[in-house]
Image (cartoon, rainbow, N blue to C red; front, top):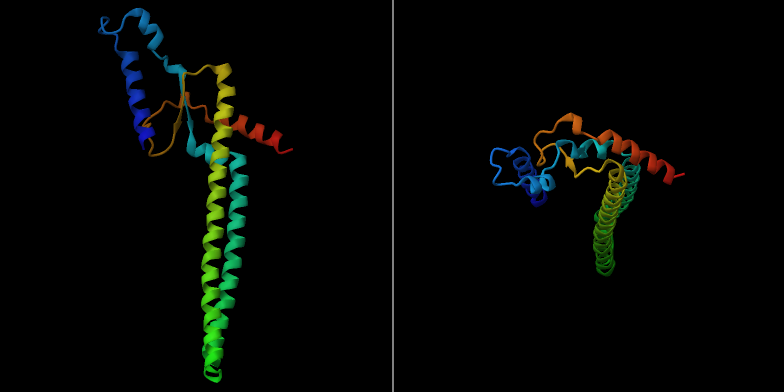
Length: 192
């Protein structure tokens, strides 16, 4: 949220500097040349489209979802076995000695605690993996944008997303498809 606010203020300042020519005393011609940003030097990438169509992210997301399904199935199977054993104990507990009942109850409670801990640990691993994917995505995107921008020499490449800090953007400044094509080509070459 802070980043969005900063970007919003920065765009406002740039807008002001660019269109405030009525007061030449405020900005001298020499400093204006250094501080005025040409509209074509600001472009944006639609983050929503990028995230939806970047093959690297699709592959990582599918892998993460497959792991989540596998973990969920394993935990449900274990939970089902535990529930079945608890039901069996309820039905047959009256035929056990006090010592057998106590031992069985302790085992059931211990298994339940282990299952809860296993679930926490597995979900924590998935969260860590998601965070790692996000970091890798950021590195890939910023790395590619630096290379891409050497030729284009844009002053700003902004990220646009629905509900974000940029409320309106001219579609002619949208470089999403170009960035997406380059990232997907790069990923294709890396995964060979």
